[in-house]
Length: 143
Picture 1 (tube, rainbow, N blue to C red):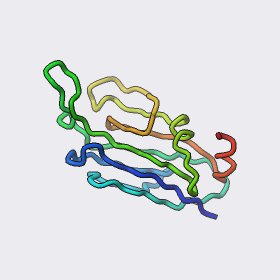
Picture 2: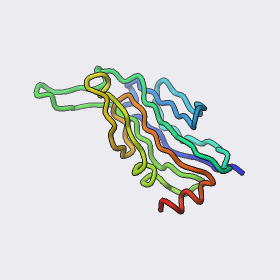
Picture 3: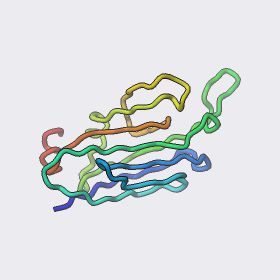
């Protein structure tokens, strides 16, 4: 039996060539070097018993993609937005965001940190979360 994983991926500044990879366990299931238009991502995953990890990897962002004014305030930036994450049509974004960790180093401008995730990736790094299948049992345990 399969479960359909879906989400919407977009770039807040499509002119900026930032990309995204999606990994399910050790398999890369999506790769884009430059997200220009919003992507309605879909992937069928095996719903047999098992432990899994889903990872979103933002890449290619440089310091040039963030514009600041004379006072250092950000006036324009590019971020990757991941919205409407669902399993078999059941929106689970908030559950996933609550269980996710976001590892990044401020695009090389700071020490590596483990941060919370709220659906927006503003730095090159990895958002990951673990779940188990069958997915309906996992969803019931976390709702």
